[in-house]
Length: 365
Ligand SMILES: Cc1ncc(COP(=O)(O)O)c(C=O)c1O
View (cartoon, rainbow, N blue to C red):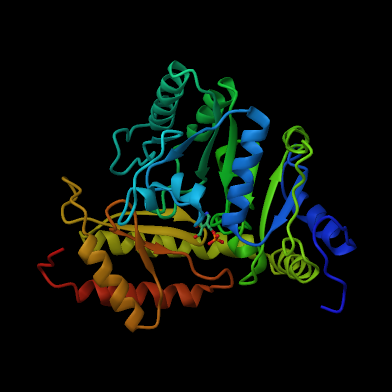
């Protein structure tokens, strides 16, 4: 904190070091890093980058998505603009179906490609209006969408359609990044794709406010159009030092591998609960990013939203914080801190089972 903190137009060794360390965690074309103060700021910047590069405005987003709290981000967040107090999507925002293989329209082996086809349909419709496509944005595993894991080939196929139409592909890795999935450092790696823009936030500072955007040189050059981007606090010396410390800890303590190992056991134990409690319709996710979808009937998949909320409240009384989400609010989200241990996981499953045992027979919404 004793180092002079100015704004991002003046470079400082710690800013350069952090940007380089962050870029080194990403695949080769993503070599330009912008530092901001929150993931909302990062997604805002991603929108501007996409528009500067494509000279187009329209965006394709996923149903139930959340990307941040600013005016434009509410516009691209159906979770907000289609929910309480929302005014719907503006004409430049096009909402594609959530690729949900549990309760969505496509559940077979070809679901990834079939869901991507609906993005292609939207692109066709945008084309007919004579407008251009700026890009496609999605969380690599939608969280408020219900802790979903995309079917294989989904992102690869969507990215192909989007790029063919001249748009850019933005991965919102705010929740899924930094090794949380266990199987990858950035979740898009599991889908075998490389986005044009990656948005990062939440865990970067382990509680300290840091947001970041990584992109290709070509996109950064298009954005470098004379307007000049800077941030007073984004990339400040303290935040960069914090960011570096977080990257060190994630690497030195092997947190990605740790998340993978603890997640495998937790997933298996939650799945064994599903054998005994029919209210559990689906258990999914990987690493420390898991979801338990509750249903009243495994055939009709009637959503058990009140039951999910009951479980979350009982868990809270037991000192364990879990959220509920998904379009029907019936998915219990499990995203513990990264040092979460196997014995923490055992405690969680035990408390989950006790809470399931307390579920009343009839719960009304
Ligand atoms: C996927 C995703 N993107 C963006 C944001 C916005 O992040 P922030 O609250 O840091 O602005 C959030 C916040 O919950 C998020 O979950």
